[in-house]
Image (cartoon, rainbow, N blue to C red; front, side, top):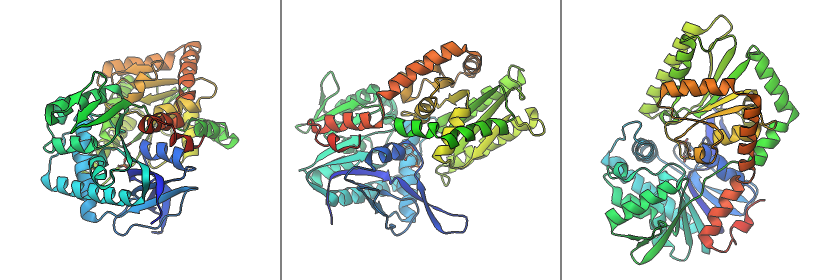
Length: 471
Ligand code: G6P
């Protein structure tokens, strides 16, 4: 088997197999921030990416993407249920997002999660060169760093968590908390989106594993030091800027505005259909603004894009029904013939179409109840070349700390959300321009390559691996 000096291990590969309408297999870019972020930096880097390509049964054969080799892992139906839909997305995902939905603890899922983590670790261990770097991603594979350390003590192991790490009192609810914590601490460097997460892990390592920690959250366990740190992930700023500058995308943005009836203001939200995204709170706020007469349908239009996600998981199915019921109710009560109050689109979106939508939107509404980072907010900022437009942003996203010039809001506070939406809609253009220019300046020096370089340089301490990334 050919080996690479840099191996990324993530649950998802950047390509997802989805059935075309005629039943044929069609490959498209995987949903979510992790796949987009890593795809952007790895597509021209000599590396191997080990992950799942969607679907069940035998692993497909996938072509390389430039110098990036894809190594698909197969998942059986039982593994999909126990590992992905079960332990990863019905236990860890809700628990790590402030338990905004009740996490489900199921012993059978844990065993499958552990077995699948072992298989990922064994496969990754085979494809990394002696002395190479293994970079493990996200909550699906939290046991992999420790398993890899046993299999390949000669390599450097990194772990990056894309989602929030919960406060200790929530993590303590997990029946297999010690194994999960020890699994992650098998890495040489554990990276998070926010410094608070590293602090939470350090506190837990002391309490549960008897580790020693320093004031800056470096952890000594079993005679080994595990470094931790915050590395806020970002987007491929240049890609979004180039898309937004394309003449066909600009024409499309004009066309979209015309199709929306040339309203005075367009509000836009783009989310994976997930209960962490605060879609229902947002709909409540918007519906009350319509009810109070503070927003008028002919004058203002809201576009809500939801990208289908984890559709076989019960909570996600129930949420979709609730959202669609609520959108139907709002349109029924406040819409007119040919003028819905909310344009609701539940479908995957092409990147160019997204860039056009971002340009059409006067106010981008990003209001998750909890989010590790949120890359949609950053994409909107990157797409606004003329520095116009307002970003309404939840305080509970990782990017709120980086974008203080957004209109920050607590999405649980419906009255506050309503007032903030109105403030953003009515803001003085000069104020908006100042805010947007500040956010764009931050983003221009904090893109996805900066993120990967910072992490990898901290991991190998030489910058040798980071130097191989695309510029
Ligand atoms: C979040 C997670 C990613 C995940 C993505 C999409 O961003 O941090 O690991 O890939 O959601 O979710 P999915 O279940 O479709 O992979």
